[in-house]
Image (cartoon, rainbow, N blue to C red; front, top):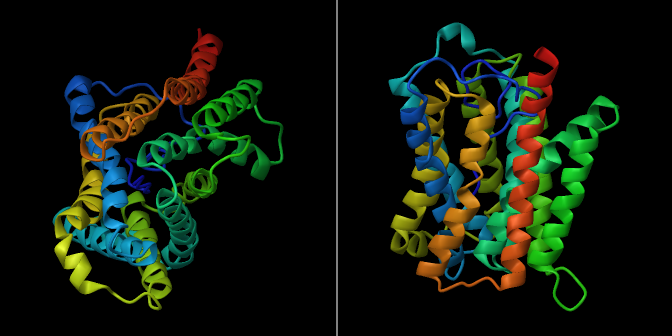
Length: 319
């Protein structure tokens, strides 16, 4: 599943995407090696979509999300124990900031997970990455200014792709609508991180949001129970979705993004949807129709245009 965090190296980046800093150029370093390293992250995240589909046959969505976030928190704690931020980075303001981000993260994960239970994992992956297109619109709404024309065009293009991918019998699938709502929550999370990462150190903020999400999802999962037996039998899936998807992938991403721009990182990370489609085809025998593949291609085109446009504009103005 998509795992959005606040790890970064000082820029207003979400750990997945940034709304405004697309003009940042790759840093002078071995960017090819960094890109190859960063490709591990969408491979992990892409594989979590069909993994979630398998796990949801035996555990409730609430229990699944709670265990995944809890294991992700544990993994991040281990990483930060090894790579400790300076003591001055830990401030009281991290508590409310983490609560806000954790709430948005929890909403996104829960809606996405419940949605996956009612649609294909491939559809869920392509719809989830729409948050890249939704985030600039959310930033414009909060900033009370008109969105860029290209952002509006990308949003319209993405909705066309969504229609091709999901509409059956004149209406969208319920599961796809839930995943789309989850993508909107992730977009809100991105906008919030872009504000908060200027005020707090990125690594402690990432820990604060994951801790808040772990607490919230654990509370929500209480009625369903821990389902420890089922979780234990699916331990390898929870290692993938929790330890790797929510913990290690963050760390890999942070190391790679020290040497490359958020724009290039975003394009690489968006490939998680393609990974999800490939893994789901092999693992679950899921297949998209020609029309659905066209919709997926339109969605990815909207994402690429949305991410590359600010850089082109910045380059043209500076040149």
